[in-house]
Image (cartoon, rainbow, N blue to C red; front, side, top):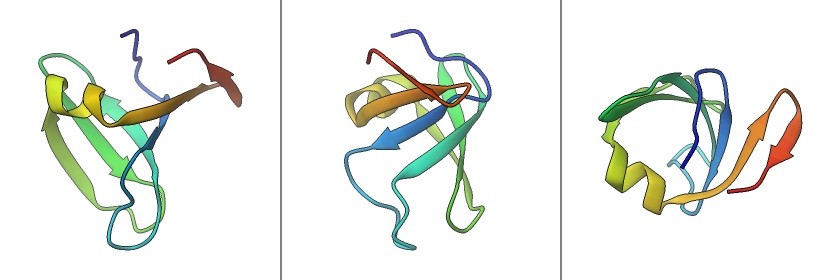
Length: 65
C-alpha cells in the first residue's frame, strides 16, 4: 500500500474521541499517526495499520486504497 507523510487515513474503527481520520506523520516499518479529532499521537506497526485503513486522502482528494 502506498502511504505518504501528510496523507489522511480514514480507519475502520473510530478513536475513543469519535474521529476516524488520522494524519500520517511518519512511515516505515511503523506508522506514526495523529488523530484529527483530539490530536493524540500513536505508533502502529505497518501491518496492523494497513489492515484497518478504509480510505486514503491525499491533497484533498481520495486515493484508491
